[in-house]
Length: 177
Image (cartoon, rainbow, N blue to C red; front, side, top):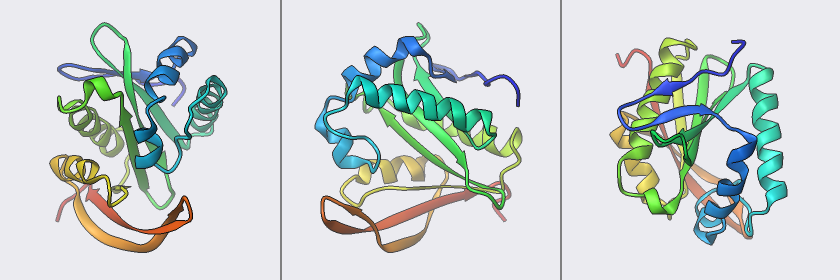
């Protein structure tokens, strides 16, 4: 795919991350909860972190290995992000974050539904999966709402702050047979 896709849903626009998004990304991710609930968002979150993430996102897309979509409202203001990354064997991992002021409005569910549809129809994936920390059950609920089922619990799969965590893994298949 040569040009980064743009997906529109009822309330959202999913599009490429832009340099002008970095200020808001840094502002949103200052809340420590993002570091606590994810494996890859540091605290404190600095401008250099956002610049590195933007660079990696562009490189991943250029290498045909993944898409990092900005989740935007209809005014095109970034409110979060959602990624779909090719893991080989016709499967991809989905991950997301949403700025705290926008929580509990169904935005991640709406964005993830569209990205999964894109992954199956446009990219031909057979399986899309996601994981979450056990202390983030809200993320697991989103996974269930978008049609994923818990496939496994990966024992002591992630280490964070010196502690090992059993990680639930959810998945959905192109053909649900």
